[in-house]
Amino acid sequence: DWQFYIDQQYLEGFNMDALDAAAAEVGEKLGIKDYKVSVFLSIFYPVTKVKEFGIVDGKNLDLSLLEDRKAALKWFIDEQLKGFYAKKYEHITLNGFYWFTEEINYGDLQLLELLRYTTDYVREKNLITTWIPYFHATGYDDWRHLGFDMACYQPNYAFNQAIPDVRLFDAAKTAKLLGMCIELESGGTENWNVERIKKYYAAGALTGYMKDAAHMYYQGGVPGDFYAAYKSDEEYLHSVYDDTYKFIKGTFDPNTVKFNEEDLLK
Image (tube, rainbow, N blue to C red; front, top):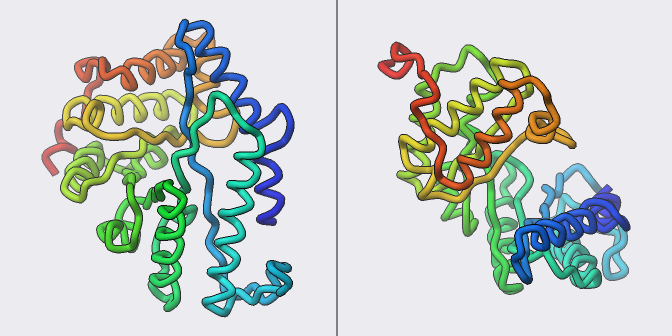
């Protein structure tokens, strides 16, 4: 399964190849020489129940063993790097790796050492690690001690209409306190989904994460909500595409969004 993921990244004409081609087109149309976009590759969680991971350095790894788990992760990182650099992309810069699970399983007594090994190994490659825990996920407030170089916080506001608007402001306050950024989440293309992603942008303009923090986005499976908005002839849905551009550029006007004042007082 891990090998399949690696292979998918470098399929001819897809994924990384497609991103490199798209970045080249953007650079050409903007008149920017050597235009590049940055990417992170993923690091999966080696679950301990896997007793026969596969052959690495002549050994079939047993992921219940700490050293074998380290070997699996080192192999996974190395194979992705080998694939990336073999492609000699001209318009993609590799920034680092993303730890895939969104919470820390402290019941895994090997995990803290495993994380430290992994994050140190990535830094040896002159790359960084990033993590995106969900709202109040275990370990979210300990991301630096866990070894990550960067962390982004999920408000998880987009997916449930019962969650009050104050969630966005609580998440922003926590993220700023902990030195994190905020993930901008789109939960779909219905009108209430559109309203919610606009509120992420408005909260970012009001609290500062629009201009003062890195941005990461969730938009569902490919081709994704932003693409659907771009292609849509429905004015309100299409406006998400324009608003996303404004937010990235730091010009989104929060006055175009109305929050529930009662929610904000809770």
